[in-house]
Image (cartoon, rainbow, N blue to C red; front, top):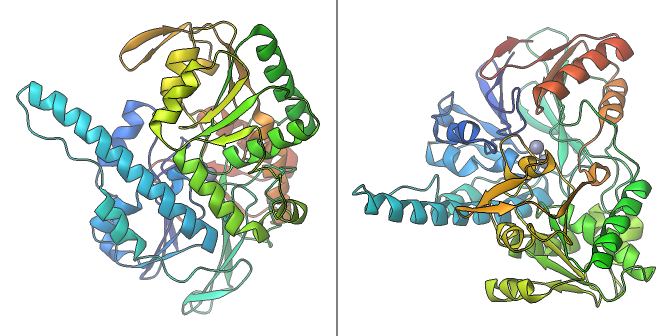
Length: 464
Ligand SMILES: [Zn+2]
Ligand SMILES: [Zn+2]
């Protein structure tokens, strides 16, 4: 049995791991590279394996850094089956369609520039048609905890990763010949505990090997209670100064969790006179999927959603679909909370809002999710004094807040707890993290669990 790390090795994005068991080839995730220009250029490289030889693609969840290269994989010949939970299938449809639209728009802009220079048209990474063909490759959804036979001696089970709606970690039980069965876990992205909507991660079974995400391997999150208090403080201080609050947010999960938090503050009458805008057609559509699968949320939240008002429907909240409505928000000077994508400020409507509000000292920008190296979001949290937006230099005078307690990812304690439940497996491979997180997590695994973890390298193959 062999593992090759084709993505998210010594970086966070581009998740893609190939497992070969004899002739059977299983890919776990096929994500988009996001971040610096160097990282994003990898989206255009050929896959490190012939896509036509892959039998199954197991998709842990619908975030773009896990599903975003599926259309390229299918276009390059993948004809196997995509296995995931039902909410992940519905969310991946939305996320991939949106991604293709962005790719096409970007290619149109670049083509215009190229033509002016006398060049030819620029092709998008993939198009809507590629997404439509990809959707045909999704097999019947896999219910959590149900054991599925993938091939002789290979059994699959998905369990709740508590990361975003539909997210799962992967259990594989592999029996090769007369050898003792080996149990492998791919963590995908593991969730933080104490979120308002999504339940905590399920416990894994004992395993021989774990491929573990390491996003926040070097830190502990503040509690949800403290994080809500910090957000409240950010909002009230900003409104007292006469400004607005921008919250760059991932359309999937962060936005819905934020709405749940803001609804709590609204119910306690702590947000007088404020207007909340969910300015993201993608987040609005994802919110509908949350309603459809409310049985996957915490039971008390599922019940609350059946009544009005609720986290997704209360008087201060407005869903903004059209770009005209989005532009109209610019006319509001104060008491607006604007939640818009993209989460790492790499594109989308948040850029327009940043251009209009970032230079205003009375405003605030609140980051509630991971900001990869090389993104505009990362520059802002690292204290940039000016940034370039749409080719224009914009001064950063707004107050910048980072509230990691709202993170959808487990912190170091959560990751160690996961390994402890898996009975401190013999082989641990660390992926999906930047070097400081990987190194800190490796050290913590050594000192606290007495195990040696290996930091996976890009394109590295290991025998297990
Ligand atoms: Zn994720
Ligand atoms: Zn991820």
